[in-house]
Image 1 (cartoon, rainbow, N blue to C red):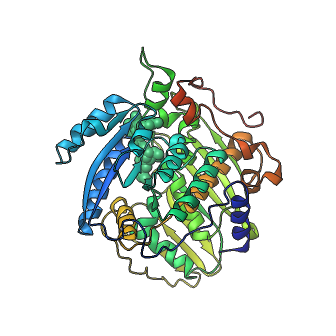
Image 2 (cartoon, rainbow, N blue to C red):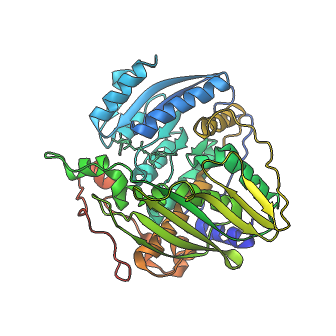
Image 3 (cartoon, helix red, strand yellow):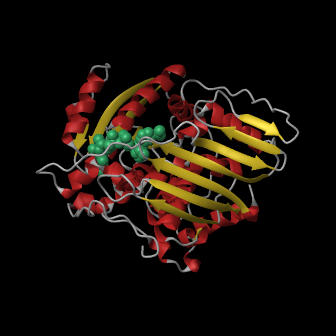
Length: 437
Ligand SMILES: NC(=O)c1ccc[n+]([C@@H]2O[C@H](COP(=O)([O-])OP(=O)(O)OC[C@H]3O[C@@H](n4cnc5c(N)ncnc54)[C@H](O)[C@@H]3O)[C@@H](O)[C@H]2O)c1
């Protein structure tokens, strides 16, 4: 890891997250060390939440331990009931008394016997939910991104430090880290196959995600929750919500977070909410290494080529992305470098839960809080550059001494506003205007 990255991490910790001192290797008293089964609770019973339950059950089978789903929470009663019914069909009966609807349902779930809590709501709620879980002594699977603003990132970072002190496991849903091909790519780069990375490009270009037009009778809060993929206040915008995957891979391969970003973005065809549907951002890493990032959610455009990670180094180049069986690494003299053998126990979605459970069983709980927070913050940096039209610097987000308004940026409505019933939805169609935002 570069010295610049060390400094930036220290800055971040100084700035209100002093507890987040990185991984703590725990001894024989760590929770769950001798467990042969785990009780699991889920907050956010939508597509990913229900998928994550299936994934942790598959991972547990591979480790020869049992999973009992003991509690569910969802803001919306219909989503809660659908998840409970689906689980019944899979032989997992969650007692009605352990199913909690409403924006404060997560608090009640923290009072149950769940040992591991899966957090799969929209990311704006994550800081509040994660803090509550750590306070209640739960191990956590936390979907990405972990926040939508710098203030939220600091909350997660600090709670991640508390989790480490308490011996709690924290596994992040930045799942490319558990994909065989991406892991091979990262290992090759870390082992110096292409020499020092000098630049590159990363891509996350797909079609439109779902949008939900408003229905009569819905409150602003319900509209925002059902249509969260389209509001920056809920998702962080798609560079944060989705592109965080490739951004995380980039930080992992570079062994650093960027020092600055400059970018553009636009809203061409989105129909609800206030997000952009494309971004083009130049991330500047230490030593003047620049990596270009394109992400897009527009139908009818290139998908296949426009996904993955491409790095150029002193000795050659490396590339991996969807549709490739393994990373391609080619040196300047034409030599192809074979990928290393990587062992996994299922898809990347199963593998991440395998890693969490395995770490608990061994009494050495994994703690991804710092890495996933930095990936989320890197994506927020890129969003800021595009929204404002100016060069945004990492230190503005993490260091109060930089005296930037960005440091305290906390998007509204906040998780607490939802709980208090004080939610006003932003206007559909009003996206940030660079130069004015
Ligand atoms: N790792 C991946 O590949 C991947 C894939 C898809 C989604 N995700 C992430 O998973 C999360 C959920 O995405 P999704 O597609 O399942 O969304 P979704 O809308 O299908 O599900 C979200 C659920 O959370 C509930 N919810 C919202 N606010 C809540 C609150 N305050 N308390 C309790 N419940 C609440 C909603 O009612 C809904 O049922 C997001 O962070 C997303 O970025 C990750």
